[in-house]
Image (cartoon, rainbow, N blue to C red; front, side):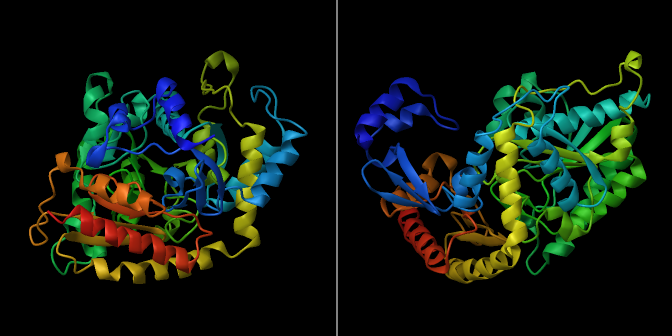
Length: 454
C-alpha cells in the first residue's frame, strides 16, 4: 500500500472537513496535498511512503501526550474488555462516574455537576440550552438572547455557529441562525503602541459593560473563549477581562459560559484558562484535549444552583431533555481518566512552562521580520501574523493564500503546520522536546521567507 493508491480511493468517496475538495486535485503551487497517515508515535506521524511529519498543531488541537501514548492505549484496552458503551439514560457505569468526580475535583470551584456530550459544538449547544432553560424554569422567559465577542468561534452546529463571529464560517448560514448581540472584544492585536495587554483588555471591557447595561433583562448568558480566540486567528487577551466579565455577569444577573474546548487542559499555562483570572464560570465547556486526542467526548460543568432549577416533580416538565446516543461513552471516559491521570502523576504544567519559554525564544527572530505584524503567545499556543505592511498592519489579500505556501513547504520538510489564513501558529503536543520545537520553528521561518518573497 502506498500514498498514491490511498489518495485515489480517498478522493473517490470521502468529503473532507474545512476543504475545497477541488484543491486536492490541483497541481503546482495551488495544490493542497492529501497525505494518508499509516501510524503515529509521540509528536510524529508517518505516511504510507515512509515520510514523517512533526504534528505541530496536535491534530487540530486535540492531542496532548502524543500519538499512541502507551498509558492511554492501555486504559482503553482494559476498558474494552469490560464495557464499550451503555445507554446513560437510567443506567450508569464506573468510568462515567469516576470521570465526573475527577472533573468536579479539578475544575474551578463551584462546578459540581457534569453533563456529557460527544463534541465541542454539542457542549456549547448544551450550555446555551441549559442557560436559556434555567431562566425559563425561573419564569424569566424574556431572558432568551446571548452576548458574544467579535472574532469568536464556538463550533459549527447551528446554535454554536450563531454565537460565533468569524464570517468565514458563519456568513453563509446566517439565515438559519438565531440573532445574538455581538460586542467588540479585547483582542490585543489592536492595542496602541506601548499599551499593555492588561490596559487594553481593561479598556475594551467598556463595550461589554454597555451591552450588559442595555440588554441584561433579555440576556441569558455571555459566552467567551478564555484568553485565546483560537479559530479567530489565535488572537489573545489579558485575564483581567475575564475578571471584569465575571463581576459584571453577577451584577446584571447573566450567566457566564466559558468555552475552554481548545484552551483547557494546560494549553495556556494553567490547567484551565479561567484560573488565570481567579474566576469560576456558570458553565464550563470541555472537549478536544479531554481524552488526550483519542476519542470524541465533551463535558459541560455547571453549578448546583443551575442544577436545582431543573430538579422538580416530573409532572412540572422542568427536566433538561437533551441527549446524545454516545453520552458518557465508556471508552472515551476511560481515555479521559488516563489523560487526567498523566497530569496528576507528572508535573506537566511545569514542563509546559519550560517548553513555552523555549518556544518564545525560538520565535524571537520573527519579531523584526518586515512582513510579520505580531508574534504572540499564551502558554503553549503561539502565533505569527503575516502582513503586507508592518507599519500599518495591512493584511495580505486572502485570495493570495500566503499561508498555504507555508503549509506546503512545511509538509515537504516534515512538519505539519496548518495556518489560519495568514497566521502561522504552533500548538504542539506536550511531549515535544526542545530540538523538535527548534525544528518546527525553523521550518516555519523558511516557509515565511517563501510565502512573502513576492
